[in-house]
Every structure is written in structure tokens, then in C-alpha cells.
Length: 441
Ligand code: DOR
Ligand code: ZN
Image: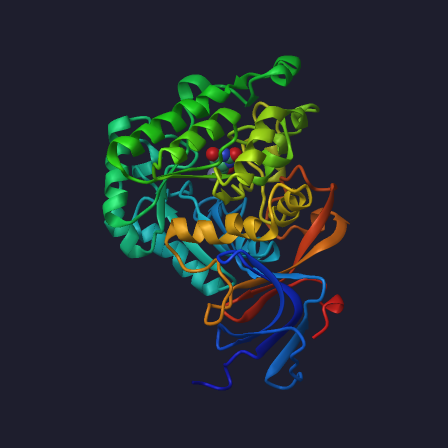
């Protein structure tokens, strides 16, 4: 091994170490070397700092497996004015992520192995975190012809999805799920019935009536969640439901899981943190698809997370420029960024008793890793050293200057937050460090 190029070993002491796989949170010290977690020691053991070892004092912090976001829009190729793989990776490591799955609604669409390879090549050059391309289910995301899943998987795609659009043709979706199962490629469904949602810009309810904006009914999502569940039942093929937002969807997934069907689901932090009242004032940073729903939906999403009906917290990080988002509410594009707010918003759920810390990490790391069939999400000896060191008690107002994404379309900017990622380690290398003065080592 080339000694000169070898990273310094890391000794991470005094932190609360979380292993979501074994449901553990314990005070431990870690030795990271050669890209791996080498040994986990009981508290009290010590190692001297030296040329070969950097000591990181994690007192008061939690040391967790690197977060994995299975739903991100990195916008490259084609929309580099919103985000690039480089700026998206920066925002990811700042937020505590060591893995991102990027959605295919780029230009060109990731419906061809050449696009998948392009994304992976860029990610490799940047090398801040691991990028897992999600290819499209249908060519051009048009919902007409399936892509070549096998070729895309060979090029490195880890899942398929037409995210942004539903696959309306039931037979085509059935075929996609069957191929996905045969090739071990997860199929991720964007549940929306355009017959019900067309022209809508926010949740259909009291607030849309008040504001005079056209609504997107809960049924638009639920009808398609119902269809995907029925396909899973008929075929025995797994399906993963993206960005769950309504109480009815949670009830449907709950029922499907009780029946033992191979259905998994994700939600995003905005769906458990905000409701449709955030749209009052016509702030386009409260506009996303699916939309912020009613308070009873928010409550059901939280319950769904607590009961493990919802497996994953993914951000649906969807960067758009200030100019695009400054258009009148009805014209502005759907979507908000989320990579740097997932940690504080999820820790709020922990403080409110909805999730334990290990359960939160299952949703932010272990479960997405399992669904995508990639490594990661656990913290034990021999594991790849993809880690985040999080200060759960740090209080601050989220400032726009802290945002590492190219776009700043977040309704949480200027809002008080508690909990922040301090250090991100990918493959044993420190790839992000916030406020180094306060960290020691
Ligand atoms: O809010 C959203 N933004 N929902 C989507 O389905 C697509 C995404 C985007 O690409 O901006
Ligand atoms: Zn999305």
C-alpha cells in the first residue's frame, strides 16, 4: 500500500455511537483506519494524537452511519444553473450524507447507460460522497416504452423511477415491476393521477379555497398508491412509493404491510414539519409536488414513521433558482432543497418522542441502503467508514450563506433549527467539517 497517500487514521472519542441495525446507542470510541471502522472500544480507552492519528472529540455528539438519501435531484446533466453534481455533493456532505440516489429527470433524461456513466464519472471526479443514479422506467419519462433496465443496471443504476411523473399505463408498470424483480432493481413510483391533479398548485382544501388557488386532491396520490399495492399483490413484485404525503396513503401502506405485501415507502421532512398553511402568503418555497397537506395528514405521516409503516426519510431535494421561484405562485416550479435540513427536522421528531435516535437513523440510512441494495447503514467493526458526527443540541437560525447547494429554495431559511451535522467521513476520509475551531483534534 502506498503509505504517502494513505489517509490519517481517526480516533473518534467520547461520542454516543449509534448502530441502527442493532438498535444501539452507546458511549464508545472508534478507530477508523484504511477506510474502515477498525475497532470499537469501550469508553475510557485512549489513544495519543500523532502523525498517523487524528483525534476527534465527539463529546456531546452522536456518531452515526453516513446518511443515505434515496431521493435527490442533482440536475446534471442539463440544469446546471439549478445544481450540479459537485454543488449537490457539497450540500450532501454538509448535511451528513455519504450517499445520494439521484433522480433521472435531467436533460437528457437518465434513460440510457451513457447518461448513467456520465453521472458516475462526475461523481467519481468529485469524490465527496457516493452517488447512486436512478434511471428512468420509461424512455424520456414519457410513460410509453420501458428503458433497458439490464443495460442501465450494468452501467451502475441502482433503481428505476419516472419521478416527477407517474407511469399511467398499468400493464407497463406491471412489466416494469416484473423486470425489476428479476434483475433485483428496485422500482420507485411517483404516485399522482394527472386526471385529478392537473392544473393544481397546492393541496386541495380549506387553504386552497381561501387563497383561490387550484388544488391537488389527496385522492390524486392515494388512487395511484392503491394501484401500486394491487400490482404488488398480483405479481408479488416489490415497489417503493416515493414522497408519501397523505393520511389515506399511510392507511393504504399500513394495510398492505399487514397483508405482507412487498411495499416500502418514503416521506420527506417537509411532510412531517409543515402543512398547507405554509402557503398562506403565496411563498413559492412552500410549493412542491406532492404538496404540503392538512394538519391531519401531517399527524398521520408522523404516526406512520413511528409505527414503521413509512420506512424511509428522503429529502426530495429539488433545487430551483431564485429567479424561477420568484415567479407568481401558480407559475413557480415545484420543489424545495432539503439536504441540509434533514438532520434538524428529523431530530425534532426525536425530541417530540415520535422516533428514537436509532429509529431515525434506520429511516435516514439503513433502510434506504437495504431498499437500494447498496452497502451502508450500520456501524460495526469492519464496516466501511462512512460516518457523520452530529451535534443534536446546537441551536441556530438557518442562514442562506450556510447553504452549499447552488439553489436556496427552502422555506426553512431564517427559521430556528436545533441539531446540525458537524463532520462527515466518507471511506475513512473527512469530507466535511463545520466550524473546525469548536471540534478539537
Ligand atoms: O416538487 C417536486 N420537484 N416534485 C417532483 O415530483 C419533481 C421535483 C423536481 O424535479 O423539481
Ligand atoms: Zn423527486
